Image (tube, rainbow, N blue to C red; front, side):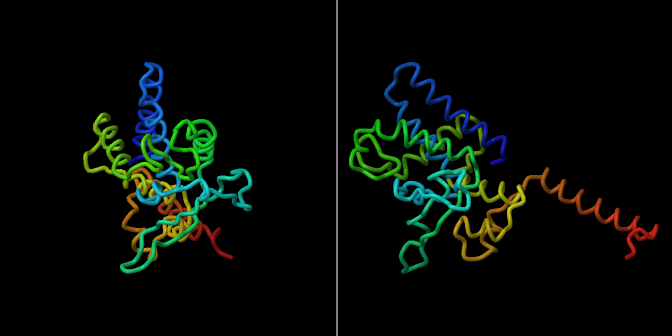
Length: 225
């Protein structure tokens, strides 16, 4: 998803919460939970299982980024495992300041409104069970996607792909991005990366302008040491 599509999607999710709450419909709280969970999926580049399995105890402080408070790192305990191995664990550092505000609001003001949240450490409690079902979040994503007329090929997992792409476009080191999303090989991260045409154009222009500048410098003697 482009940044514009992503903003449109999250705005629509927020609008559904506001509309349900204004009309007094009971579904506003689950809609709030799902909107926040989808934002977290993107903000930390998580797989569906990883985000669903998050507990309050998986949120932590990053001493190197104190401005994020107690949400400077997310500890993933249910990362994709190799065949025959236990789930891989990793820590994902917070990079988007807005994500901290979103999660603070959820934990501080809305999560405990679920009756199932009492004595339950799950970050996303459900109306009838301690934890949100994985399929339900994907269904919510698909419903909003269709309402907005976005390509039907987009699934919840595209938020993770978008995270990788947007970090690369923003200039983050590829190795950092690889470690954030828990890929063993850089080639796997590369498969996730689909930078926008605008980014590619700007990158090409930067390279070409640098080449031209060096050529002019060499021709005038300015490039000689």
